[in-house]
Amino acid sequence: MSAGSADPNQEERRLRERPSILDLSFAELEEIVRGLDEPAYRARQLWISLYRTLTPSFGEMSTLARSLRAKLEQHYTVDCFETAVEERSKDGSTDKALLRLRDGELIETVLMRYEADDHRKRRKTVCISTQAGCALGCTFCATGQQGFRRQLSVGEIVAQVMRMERIARAEDNAEIAVNERSRGERQGVTNVVFMGMGEPLANYDNTLAAVRVLNHDQGLHIGARHITVSTVGLPDQIVRLGSEDVQINLAVSLHAPDNATRSQTMPINKRHPIEEVIEACRDYVAATNRKIFFEYVLLDGQNDSVDHADRLGRLLRGMLCHVNLIPVNPTTEGPYPRPGRAASKAFQEKLTTHGVASTVRMEKGIDINAGCGQLRARALTETR
Ligand code: SF4
Image 1 (cartoon, rainbow, N blue to C red):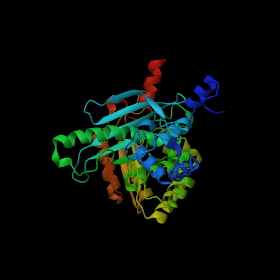
Image 2 (tube, helix red, strand yellow):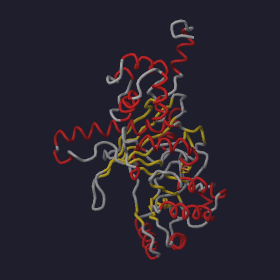
Image 3 (cartoon, rainbow, N blue to C red):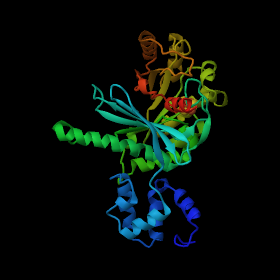
Image 4 (cartoon, rainbow, N blue to C red):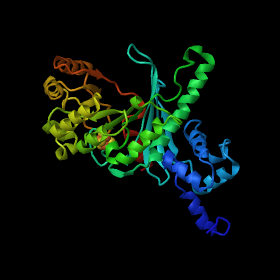
């Protein structure tokens, strides 16, 4: 039925339910543009408008012919969500957004600003979600305590970065206006970590497709080595990732050096014991020759003793890897307090004796519930 002859209610519903154009790959866009009897180069122009200039609506894409903009508008939307809550930490380093997807599901995205230090340049990292909720139920994680809702689409994953990119670019441009020194540095988001709500490798195809969009040289062009995918350790998917033609970083959440301790906080360990995870990691390193990052949240009295560090050191000895030690971000639901600095330091020293490199990383944005799922949990509690 044509737009002109449609029942108005039906037509309104159709427009409301248009798919997001952000769910399409570059090749799919080319196909659609061809199907609309437009020359192939229009696909590139459209891609650039979406991902490089971040034009928020078809109507504003002035490089495209008016007729094409109207056709696109009829069949697609550029939107994936609206902002439900937006907060900035007191020190201004962290922004967190709670986003309401078009079907009402809530997800979280965080932008973290880091100043330059002795080892690294100044950077802006976005932490994104890949699922609404999560089925894996880690006991220290607010999302894990809320259950699984659904997979995110490619567009819903990528749009989180685009949202934060607009903020990051605007502030960088404002800074350039007063500070010549920052001219020439990469502006906007420099790094993306798939560490928000959900298990990225349980949404494997959409996660990989999103990585390709983020990395595309005509779009956001975030370097693959600046993209990190984090997993609880799904062995088959880790091995599969090792065979992909993407040079991204892989982070594996270990959080314990043995099955008994790990199963207490990560129920997935009962399905995939730690030996299986480590074997998959060794296969991944052998296939890619890339370093694996192990995430280890330090939980006071649970997994933070020198003995745990000793066992972790034995487990990882000789592997091309780096351990990130993260003193837990206390949640209202989680039972674990944050360990003191001395305990974290002693843990790190023990790892060093096994030749395993590590960094103690403090989480940002505690005053705005920046830990995964905390803002959603708070919003839902307030709504109730
Ligand atoms: S830590 Fe990650 S995998 Fe575990 S419950 Fe939370 S979101 Fe899911």
